[in-house]
Image 1 (tube, rainbow, N blue to C red):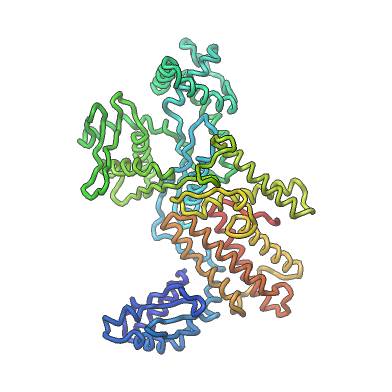
Image 2: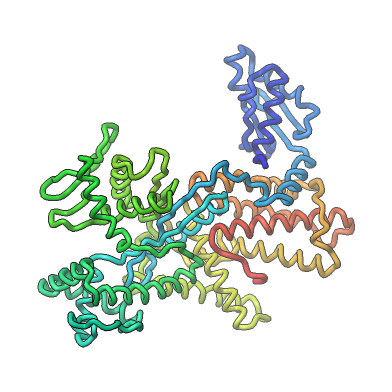
Length: 589
């Protein structure tokens, strides 16, 4: 199904062709003066030089040819040569009718579906999620859903930090505390226990303790480095212990991500890339790309067109140790060879921009990816407190993510019980969780990802303004009207769109008609904030229509059914959009 604006432009192009002018002059845009017209075309201005004619003469010629248009009810030529356009209500009605009857509201499927891998989340095992993990999870989940809705095969990978010194630190501290465990007995050849010798709470205490000790005690750190080497060299006991660490951590991470309505297809980590590294390093050496520099193995990635200094990408340190770049390159190699990815998208803090620029250039120069493979890094800004500084607890520490979610849910619960006396505590708690998640996600996603933003609980949980709760309140209001229509004996299966009877109704209909273009644009730009802007405008358009129209008391049954059809489509579009953003609406608030 063609986009709404494309159809309008097609009609305008016909007018230019019939008047003897180039069809490319017929491009239509949304009016920047909505008080004068709904759409506009400035093609006559652009054609004046080519046709040696005054723009107003060209505009008058085109307007005359469109006098009987099935799309426009008004085509006005205005000095010095603008074409001001208003749409026929029947054209808008028919477009919505086709939208409502089409899968995905007529969003066109891609000619070729891509395989897209999205790398987001990036938590470290043995550490609780904190507010610094919020943006990657929320933005990555939404981009994954946007790509899927647009018809592509999408794989979300959490990419765990599960390898390296942090593992050695945990093992060293465990050995100190529980030396009797069989994992530390080199002579043990039986089966290791199936149950982990620690809980997630104990694990979360062990790592910071061990990390603190290693900074003060060189001998302790050396022992941790040796433990890391033994683990990576395949020590049987350490590998079994490491698996316990992974299992306990991932179970807890899955629970926390579930609270954010975030799901991953793969729970792979840096450890999965480790076996690939030796062969990859050898290939880089053999190709001549990798060379030694000050003892380290590097690949030069600077290009002649660079306007800033791009340092070489370090593949191995002078002691032979791998780095994040090494792991990321090995992961790219794995994703290309085993998943045959057409596109690799990474979500991280924008301060990692240089890292990914280097890694992507090595991947391309080495031939790990083909020339048409998309490599994209989406760098996001910082989530700040009201003081403009990175969000902290009142004590000045980094807040655990589960505590942030808890605080939002409590604030929503308080507002619900204050406004509703007829609600049970159970329903209030459940509703608070649904609205709280919308408050968090919409509060984040309504900002352009690359920008820093202020996390303001009071504003995000408000039922008024550009907030998640306001969007949900609009959906619940529509649900309530539809339920009352059913109670009056109305049938939602027997509805027919009618011509708009007032300006607010027509505006709502035209807002709905922009869904396809918006969703395609959100995919092309990987921009969830475009969906937020769309549903905020759509919610505003609905609420204006609602306040100006007595829907359920309308005596003309056809008119009423037409309004109900419009409400049903509005609800469906809004709920589709919030699902793509990663949250849902309750049945009542």
